[in-house]
Amino acid sequence: MTNISELASFLTHLHEKHRSNDEGEVATYIPELGKANPDHFGISMVTADGEEFSVGDVDQEFTIQSICKPLAFLMALEQHGRDKTLSHVGIEPSGDAFNSVELCPKVKRPFNPMVNAGAIATASLIKGVSAEAGVTAFVDCLSKAAGRPLRVDELVFASEASTGNRNRAIAYLLRNFDVIDEHVDHTLHQYFAQCSVLVNCRDLAAIGATLANVGENPQTHTEVFDAFCVRDALAAMFTCGMYDYAGEWAFRVGVPAKSGVAGGIMAVVNRQLGLAVYSPRLDERGNSVRGIKVCADLSDEFGLHAFDCTNFGSSLLRTL
Ligand code: GLU
Image 1 (cartoon, helix red, strand yellow):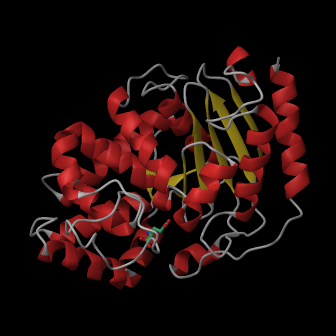
Image 2 (spheres, rainbow, N blue to C red):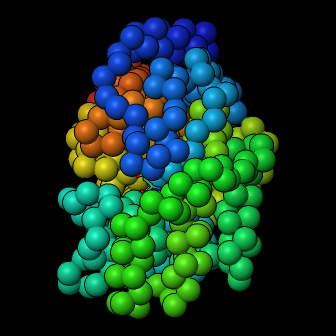
């Protein structure tokens, strides 16, 4: 049986073990992201009963980037239901780069909500009556899941907007096929703002724990998300959440997760915990190098893989 001090000391051990790894590069294609300190490294875990374990630079803020995508998908499902949402965005892995300017050729809609095309389609579904209303609703929802007020980083937002021509191309492709409505700029505003929400590791772990706890923040006991929509969003994370590493991630780590180009990873162990790692050096697929290693080690050590066969169906952490 795992006790709390054993878990805390294992996180400290992982931080020590991986902090000297300086492989990978900080993303620079959005100029503002290139200013991140490559050495920052934080690990946080929040259990489904609200205990937190954190080590390293866990209060350092960074932008959520693509980790916004499953959360926006979840909100679209809540607001529009499954059928309507899935008529705008599919649920199949694409096998192509996250920023591909493409739709699924058979049905002329984005492959899934974790690639930019799908995320822009879901941003269109949840944008508000005004540009600011939609962003405020999104930030408020994430703030409830994180347990503290969050905000958009205006510098990153401006940097995204001024360099986001590929996303503009995707949005007009979506418009051409009626996947999004005529308010293309409004949709892009929503998408760029969603990517630019500032979080720290502790926030991401709390958001992950809210998903693990089927939609209720386990620290504040606020009902944030609909449980059935959480299930759908976790399924999309499981199959498509880690860029072109999604299959190998499912194989090696075996939990739903989403990463972002600022260097965050949020992983969810259903009914058990949310895990977050922040380390901005990315591998060639766009995932945090240290983040992948920390999650893989934790999964191995505590039998977190969805198909784990060492704990006979009761993962060690469940006994916490
Ligand atoms: N804002 C980023 C983009 O659309 C998101 C990238 C990411 O984290 O994958 O390019």
